[in-house]
Length: 330
Image (cartoon, rainbow, N blue to C red; front, side, top):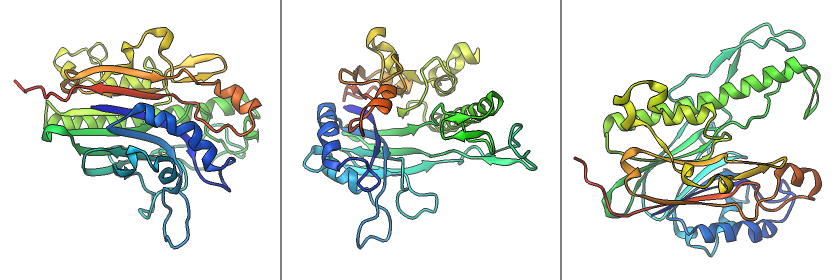
């Protein structure tokens, strides 16, 4: 069984897309074909308005996977907050060779939106404001080979970019004060950590119901595994201080990749591992290997500044392989 995760970086169609879809297909489709995945988790899949469709659809994705094995796969996707159709930007999509028994978006299902009054807003804030998640996680229950059930959570956590603070910006990336930027960065960190906590709470419920449950968390976590979001998701015994909880911790599979090859993004010359795959202890018994397709990655900061309308993705596709042989519970 091969499971892959890939951030497609705002896959869209003109006029919102800067380049024709054919140019993006030329860059992205070979990555998907190389992955040869049985289950594929995609991030940043934008929705489009098309004639005779009352709701947005995933027309750009349909064109990308046309003629590939993924065209006939089962599909689940996040939806607009209204519940009608997919969102205009940054949908999560999970494609599966095997039937998807159920799927759900997870967004403030276990954690209520936080309330916060900004300290640096100009004019000064008079009331608390809601801090909500920018996007949900996508949980799918899949009936894999042998009749086993696999829970796959497709994740895209908040990026480490400072949230906007009223009256504190001169331009989209130019702040008026360090204090304003610092508060915006703090709010984004709160969002990212709270998203990770909500996913962890969902995983805990799965494990409480079945200690041998097979779970995979895959996606763009916008954090390396030493940072808070990954620590929240893993729940390591050295953090909880309780060895009795160790079997419920998640395992970061890409830790097995040699350090000089372990990166999924390059930013300002610094390789970073932001796209991860984690699995439950029960599933770890069938884990074989993980690969990061990062040979062709360019520096995303350089590309943004110097490349005219890039067509690929600044993220690497990550692929993990598991044995199909089930491990018996004891």
